[in-house]
Image (tube, rainbow, N blue to C red):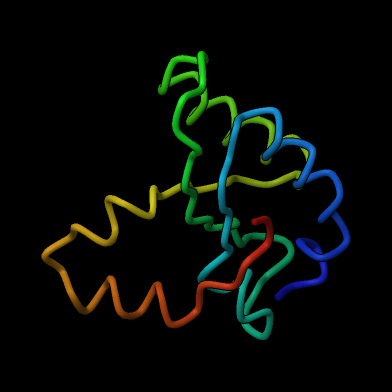
Length: 105
């Protein structure tokens, strides 16, 4: 995991609690760390929301993305784990899950 994610773990946990996130995982270059370009790379996250929140689903999704972007100072791409698991593109699914590293659970 890239140091940028590691150094902000407490802030990420606070954001996850605010948006009722059950599990957050980083994948891609931010998970591998070695090919992460601090000047250009975005941060890719898999998210699983806890059921039963009163917050509207779109507000949770986009609010989480915006707050993570603000904290990390870079673009964030979110992908819901359920959508990935249901994807027929097994190559993409396998590639993402191979790199997925837990950040919050």
